[in-house]
Length: 239
Image (cartoon, rainbow, N blue to C red; front, side, top):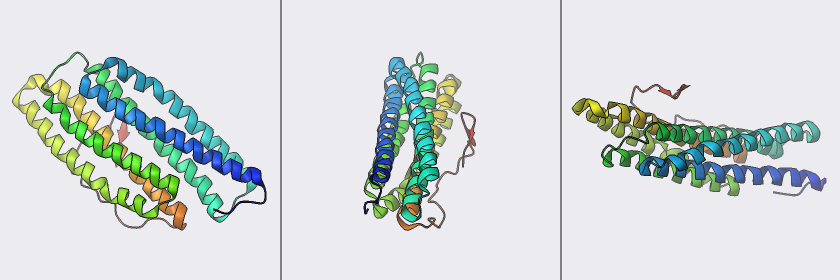
């Protein structure tokens, strides 16, 4: 990207990129640790994830404030304006990913004294592995402005949805077979839905990258495979 006449403008944009990168690192860590806490039933790790969300919130607020100030002071046009708007969008998605990881961690705390068969949790682990992979790839695509890599992430979102549908049916079966599983499996369903929503937000970021690079909105329907009727996630309406 060519330099600007006012060097401090380049510095402002570079600082936004670095802050997004920092947010991405925090969001990745929270997502991975929330799932680790679930698999290991680690209450201490879950509490650490919950506390980490405050840092992510602060970073998102700072990015938004600096972006608005940059627009007011510099009145950017074309790619510069898109980059500033994209920073606001991506930081919002990363903040929401942190909220979803925090929701998983809160569920871990609620079920930390329960010990069902470990295989019940492995489906969420697999979902989270896919979501973490998408998050890493889309953050790399944002940093390098790699349009093809962003499109690849956008296309992969249906894999997480399909896995969620399979896990949804499996957990319902466990609950019907033994009512003692109902409490744990209900919490696990919410965990799985939160992970599925993390995948949705990585897709949002992929769409923002398309807008950033091309100046156009990515057209076409997302590759969704979520046929479940589990409509809400910890108070948030699912798409």
